[in-house]
Image (cartoon, rainbow, N blue to C red; front, side, top):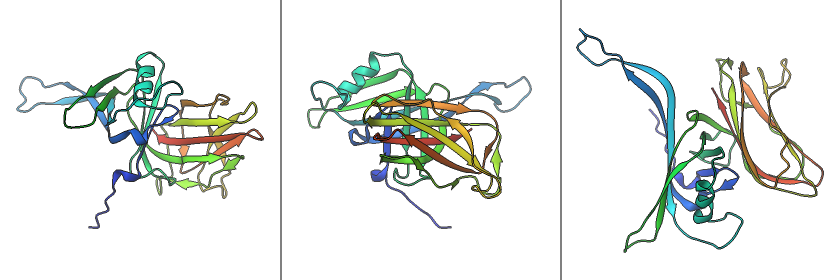
Length: 251
């Protein structure tokens, strides 16, 4: 059996509208399933029933502080996290972050456990532990982090192979790190096709509400059938430039 290994140097972590990769040296995502003990009288071993999906993520890295906005250091970002109850979105690109199809783990989360670690013989460190609100989504980057200044249509990606389609819907995690220009707008659509646009034409699967802020993050879910091939369409208003990444997760 051939063994293929990967190193984390090419991985990435996107938290909301921030690329926090350079802060971190570890990132773990755990997918769990709630279990209830359903052992009854007369059985010789424990029995369990799966209930609902659970999970979380742990991040750790090096601490530093820079004064003022925008959020560009762990101290400022973590202060923003603690001061808000808004939903937040996290994507961990596992085996790389520069190729369509690179595997990812994405989740929605709200509050976090954050702590500094102080050692006399070492630099200051911080760690974040978060619980997923809705479970962990296993997916891939349908659009790795990129800068675009014109409307772009991606090539079809076959992430399913012979099975052809799934029927449980999908989620798209959107991380827009920057959107500049005169009153800029960005419209993102995910399309699907059974045969990469051959006999079966491309059709809209997920439509993201128009983005017009300088930076943004969201998750959009869809139910029903998701066909074999997936691609993105990024429509930018003339003169706009966007830096963004997309993580696509079948359910």
